[in-house]
Amino acid sequence: MGHLLTTTILFIICAFAGLASNAVYLPLPFMLGPLLTAATIATLFPRWLPKGYEFPPHLRLLFIAVIGLMIGAQVTPTLFDNSKRLIISAIALSLFVGVALFFNYQIFRRIGGYDKQTAFYSGTPGGLYESIAFGEDAGADMPRLMLQQFLRVILVVTLLPIGLSFYLGEPVGSSAGMSLAQAKVSFAALPWLLFAGATGLGLGRMLRLPAWQITGPMAVAATLSLCNIVASARFLRRSY
Image 1 (tube, rainbow, N blue to C red):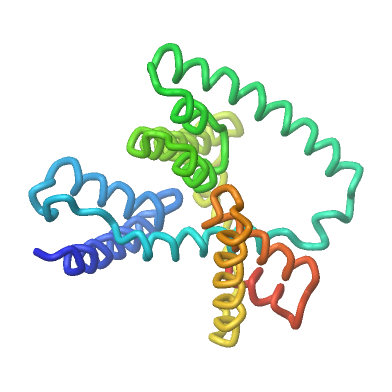
Image 2 (spheres, rainbow, N blue to C red):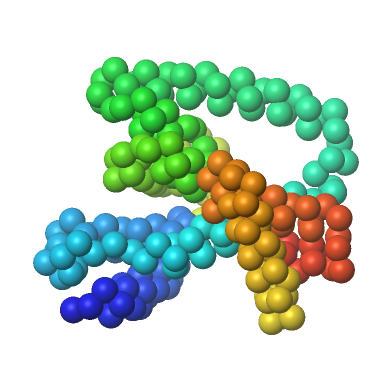
């Protein structure tokens, strides 16, 4: 079976896995559903995949750019409405991230025996996609890095809501009916999304930004969102 056909079949299977996960209210259904499905195929049924199969890099680049757009579009002018509290939160978060990263790094480096790059980016306490992108640029062991980062997310989104539900005595999050879903976006937003993504990829590569695949689109989306250029910010924010 050819690589193109394999990729198409995997897309279809994982799309149904995402829909099924959403139907049973699995946390982060459109990430965890396809993730678990693809991992099961790769580990338990490797013969189903062609020899030396890899997900198409250009297609992967497109998805990484979309993730960058999603993150950058959340940077809005309202973020700076209460600058004093923002500064305090930024300082506290920076301290926590530094301490957590230090201890996580020691665990992966000394106990796990990981190389420095893999241990560092496996130990980041947040930023799933950013950690993977930066780790790839730094030469980390990608299978190990991706495994550790996805395990972190899976444990957090499954165990934390359950623990909070027991602590508070009532369901929390999606189990309590909470949703962050926004209004659907018309196809009129597509030209702006394509422009932001293409421009971000081009500038990121030209300027040699670290993890340019994600940081370039993220910077362009954030700029458009902050400047409200021709209503592009409204399109981008509503898209996600």
